Length: 301
Length: 335
Image 1 (cartoon, each protein chain N blue to C red):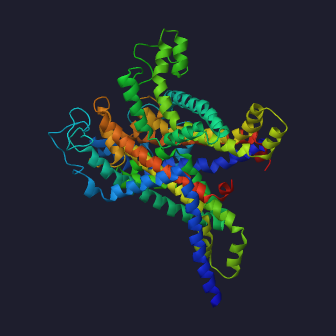
Image 2: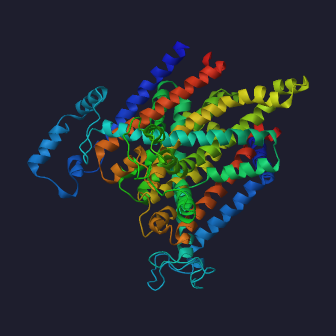
């Protein structure tokens, strides 16, 4: 079958070509490249946390409570960004906090993406009453403000990081389901799907191998946006005492503990929030670049 | 048009039933015995336990409990708070105006700033104004608003001492609540300085709550304007020698507003979620803070009915947005 081999070769070539194409458009967006750089830095900080953090993030130095950052009067060289109310090193806690944020983002997006893809594929592929029932259920989930529903779910499951992640994933999942369903319905009408069906492909093969790869563009963009929302929402849950529990160095939880010192020690309040803002901003910048690079409509303009 | 509205309403019924199932299921899926959970740390005698269980209908089969729940709902009975013993609906209605006042103020700020910024950014595409405003919008969009609120408190209440830290009005003023809206009530009361006090309490929370919708509206307006400005009819209008202000103001803006109005409407859900955080930070006595307090106090009837009411409001607002969309965009209506 010389036919198949030649097709396979051109497949790989097409893929390489598409990647080069994508990178060409992505690179033109300076913000997106900056976002990507910050994100890579964030990943490095999270992975190398045990090596680069100067102190244990939960170690309490009883002789160094609320020490200001090193450049301010009273700062100490041992604590570059100062310490919190129980004498823990801010810099080390912020560094370890990056692990939490990335972990939360990855887990939430993975659960929501996989769940949403399967549900959306089933709804879009089978249509009819299956579609109606599934989409009404998704409407119900979407009728609740996401943070409120996540809060109530956490109240049911019990406060904690794992439950917060599950709750956020459940709340985000309908967005992926809707998006997948819409793209699947668009693709179903195309000739190549009919061709695959005629040549004897089963339902599962049609759904996952034939249709799904052509629906991935918008899903990737949505996944990036959900990643940043997950970081924000889990920090909000932490802030409200429903997410990661102290002494975890999750940024939102750190902010909750710092609230009573807002007028006395600016660094315990300002720094964790700044860390959240920078991470979320970097991911959103990347998302904007991805959307522009993956959207064929914008390319031509 | 009536058929259009009826169709939309019919479409909402299954969703609303789903919402009632979720709210009903909420108390049932709590791990452990809901009666004991409601009793809290102290526990209760077996007699009292049976009494409460019967009172709440937990001794009946689950489908009957659900229909009882629906029946009570249709009669406007949303249960009583375990903490204050007052009907949930009464509490909700007394706190809701505070949230509406905050939300309206926020959406007003977001629209009045967001739309002009978006239009200007689109007209001057690529200019420094476009770049700075869109960067700012992206920062606003990425903002953890609970932190943003704390920063504003540090600056305006701590360092500058311009605004109070929390509440709706200074304790110095006391007047009856007529409308529930502090701005209106303080004006009616005629007390000197009351209105200003109400405004100074409202300004920081509404700016915080407006941040994300403002960013979204500015970005959406810009992209809608850019799309419309590229259309043929705009080029035709320009070619006819129409003054640019008229081309932008009439031909482009009117059409660009259609998606923008939808965006503004869809921010209501975002606002209600944001209200939970904003009201907590500023101790604003609205439904967001009420829900959070009830969740942490394990006041389940309040959480259950509050969830139901908030979802119903979001649904109704989305319906209104849909209908407005049909009104201003005949293409949708006639599909």
